[in-house]
Length: 481
Image (cartoon, rainbow, N blue to C red):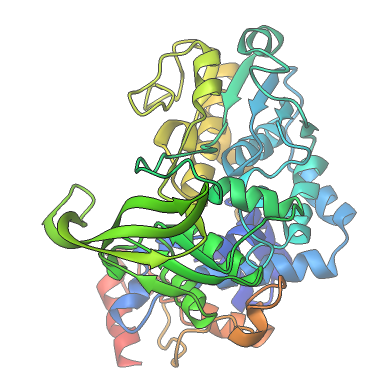
């Protein structure tokens, strides 16, 4: 609520500072986040949740556009604590590694991030297409992270160019944020045929400007964000695309809006269909045989388990993209010499994130398995707080946060009207372009959205001398409004 209130009061610079110190990648997450925070927004009980993701994007985009990088860096460098003399090595420059690096640098430590690719950013750069997250947007955030003192060493892979033992010896702490870059195997006959691509490999190659030999008809297997990104990328490369998913559309883990946009752009969706085998002739794909499924009992994640039937049919295609999940690269994991879970993820103490080597911490997808940007960033933030406390013996993390003063009066009325969303580029234009698919909110839209906030963080009503909780009172006022 703080950044929303500051925006309402036209204090954009302070809102930006509050946002960055809670989320060092707001322009990126403002475009690709699955916005779990909205699940806790009480405005949903009135009409619809505050569009916090889009407001983050507006604040970040506006500041990055109107303020020079030097001025932004100077502002945050003032918040840096005195140098501790401690050195920290971070492996991986995705969301988890970047978050940890940003906070640890502000806490006064010397931070070096090692990245196997030629540029930092991890999946933000190499797995998310430009139409969702433009490279120049990510570069603005990387400039700030560099500016507060983080060093990047690229084209340097763990297990190939450096060892965990050397990293551990050269640093006071090491944080492993290596992500999940190996695709799960489809495990059906024919998966070895030409023109069967793992999703991340496909997206990575496209991001590097490689020419991919796609056929006219592409089948994308999976229902997550990588599947939707692959489908929309294949559309932009001129293919006819069908997304194949074994559960119902409601069970797809991809962001619902992204799925809808893919369908608007021309992708087809086949649900309740499980791959049986990849068909081919002369080593090339000719089709995907699938079996119809029915939904059974609910699993531990609240989704109904697909049960394969004997009813089969063929989806004609000459290219298949597998997007059924990712895992930690097995070759890298084995070279770490650390205990692993059965899934291949790194074993850590859930409270301290320490591995069997007390100087080595791990977090993000390397620990959870493939998750999302905000989960990974949360691990980076948690790791930074823990590592700092372990190295200096004092809990200082919250001292980084500013404490701006702003209006904390219970609102008699909040803004009415629908939720503000970024305007989409027409689907026929989107399909043939790599430009961003949606526009940032206007200043008026962002401020109107902030005014929809019920300010349920205000715990005491001004008329309540005893300081009693007034959440229900706030809600009643909003409903009346």
